[in-house]
Length: 238
Image (cartoon, rainbow, N blue to C red; front, side, top):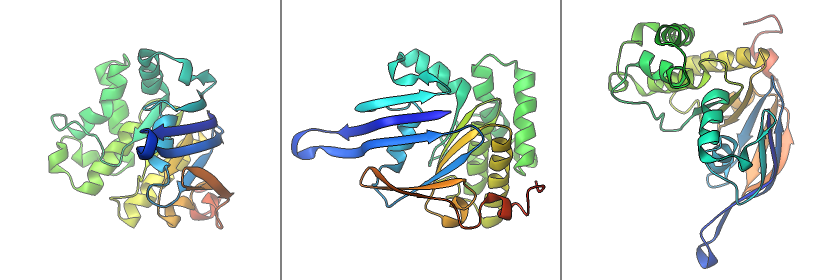
């Protein structure tokens, strides 16, 4: 679903030059969740931004669902992003003039889904995240954790194949975080791929693979000690 080959990203030039990513290779198959960990400034957010076509690499190539996105025009990248990718930003990026339900339904409507169908799909995922009774509220009327869950719902609504999440547990308590991770695992069982940047080992343990980034390089990879199935309470849970 996601294939990054020899990807590098450099900002600035001369003495101000910063190598955010250095020759990164990353492949994420459908149905799998990958967690990316590393210290602040290691390149985690840059990795997600390039994977999500929000930034172009300085060198290297990126494929999403078999499409070579680095060769696409800006408008074609935007179209692919709307249809294939759900992105959870650290600062949520909710539109303040829209309700929670309208924020979640908006990506579907922008891609041509009828308003009623989009609202039904949005309400379904808000209910799964325990926000059905908050759907009519505006972002300013929601807590930080509720806004985070709305942002996650917006990223996961519809038939997107790739979820990219930058610190998705940042504003969530443990119970809300577990609800979110169960939903992500459920989507992965249906074939979605997910890449999650996190500093929290508890949330990383839901992933199939955990990658470690340092100074722009992927330096290690491991599998969680417990694995997602143990956290789900067995293969038949959820």
